[in-house]
Image (cartoon, rainbow, N blue to C red):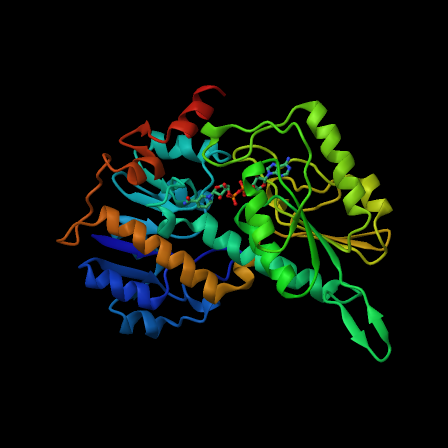
Length: 376
Ligand code: NAD
């Protein structure tokens, strides 16, 4: 198999594979083409890829020769047009949102795998890029909040008096939220957590966080561990509870998301108005609309002496370890589709291969994506 590793576009610093993973791939008899400067933002120069056995080439050559093309983000519009059947596209392209792109892949006979659709099973954990990147985001969000806050995180008892610890509120206790709890606790803050899934209560408590309960949440055991849309009555109760906790908080880390939908609005403008001066809100759900009403994706909003940061891009700001984790996940996935001769071998009997595949042979494969597209 010839695998082509593309350079990311825009402000992305990560790369989908670092040189040591490329070396593992060449060990599996795959031929690897790497676009010039692909690893620059992640401190991986071209010569390291060459030393790992890859051929560093111009972008055009990758589109001409590679059987499998790999990058982190969805393809740019012009790249989508350049792909030709039977090429295989692998990236995290958010197929529940990017339905036009999915239709293009299907209509053009492109086989596409979206790494954010890897089933969340125990066997797939080592391939789960969502978990890896959420870990980076949860950690970095807390660090940014600590740097921006005009007060300390830990309690200090000094000759100049006692400093009270910061109160941190974490909304959503998925992977990013739990990492945020752990990081904020390590920095000495008091941490409070909301989630609609009661199953996370023990995890929150084991990390030293306090779980704030709101009764009456809708939970769906068939949703694969994800949250589902809540009733109006619950939303109202939750709003009140969040407001009460938020006004006592120095920091809010927002991570609540519902796959395929706009992120729930949990922090209203009115609540922000009542928060302490200098408070910081970091909204990791910014790219899907944000949990705070004031959030603007990719922007820092100053509102009545509070700072609201809409940031979904922390992995790119931690490019080396984020690329390391992403690449290791990708490698574990690629091992499922490369046979012992180094050839591409798509076994759709494998639930991970099938669940991650979005389009193949002009058809939609992933069941959730299929349902969304067919009901639109
Ligand atoms: P996510 O990014 O989809 O959402 C983050 C959190 O926000 C979730 O905990 C969700 O319940 C919460 N949320 C959604 N709406 C909310 C609302 N209105 N109010 C408060 N909270 C709200 O979640 P994620 O980090 O991707 O994890 C989702 C699930 O998948 C978790 O159960 C996690 O343990 C599980 N998981 C399993 C595996 C695996 O087995 N391979 C890997 C990673 C995650």
